[in-house]
Amino acid sequence: MHPNRARTHNSIAVLSAENGDYTTALTFFKNALIIQERSLPPYHIELAIINSNMSKCLTFLGRMNDALKHARKAFDIARRTLPEHHPDLEEFENNILQLVDRL
Image (cartoon, rainbow, N blue to C red; front, top):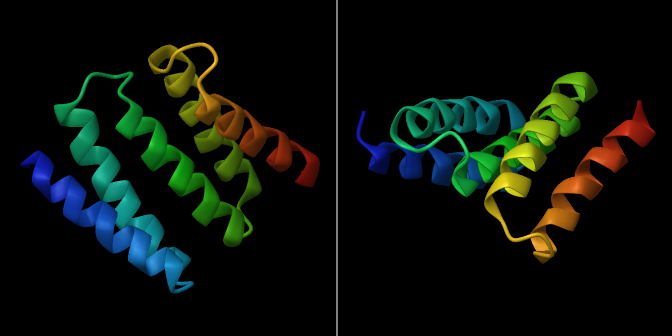
């Protein structure tokens, strides 16, 4: 699939999540992730962002263990991709800490 399809899936996912339809959002984030994993290097920041968004949807759906898995993957990619003191790294890490607190 063409990478532009990933952007379309991601956009639909974001809109679905903003409207509280986390199940639909998760489906479209998964599709976007599959497409992006085929077309991007394994440690591309877009993969971190999609994993982070999936984690947030899974949290709203009460699937904390799955959410934590995606949050950790997002952080792992981000720390390999972003500069050491990039402000987004703290956000990715905080997502993990918040999930751990909820388990």
